[in-house]
Length: 208
Image 1 (cartoon, rainbow, N blue to C red):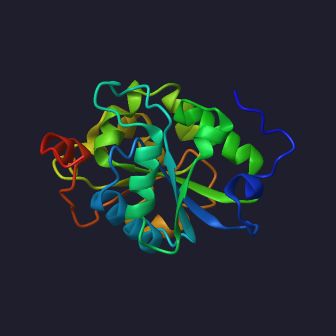
Image 2: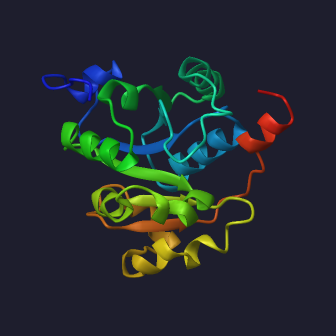
């Protein structure tokens, strides 16, 4: 793991971070970044009343095959080009921390930024797959989670294994603005307008 002791989270981000900031964390391969990532981020900023959204570009997603995975530099550049909003920040946090699994990344961020209010953002398709993630229940117990509707999964996600396991910790959508700053586990399903963009389809069409 990369050595980060002695460095503040502000130093890792390359910008000052005011205490109390409400920050959404959107992880992924961004292979490539697309309009769907931007759409989810802007919806999260508005509906959860966040100050910022950080895109955590993964150096290597352990759940995805290497075959179609572009190099980190190319994926990071695609994210920078797509993040067309002043409150969206594309980061190399995972690369700098040396973390591979989301639960480890989130644990380190909460350790380095105890005065920040993090919310983990994920599409409904990923929420269905969440039980396949390393220590997924620990992740739910570490940071509040906002599940954003995705085409084909908007009805299934609230009925999946993760939803049932944490059903007593689900907020109503009307309380979504309260999510940032709540003691986890806490999660909410956000029925946002659906966006059809898909990294898989982009690659299959030879546009990546």
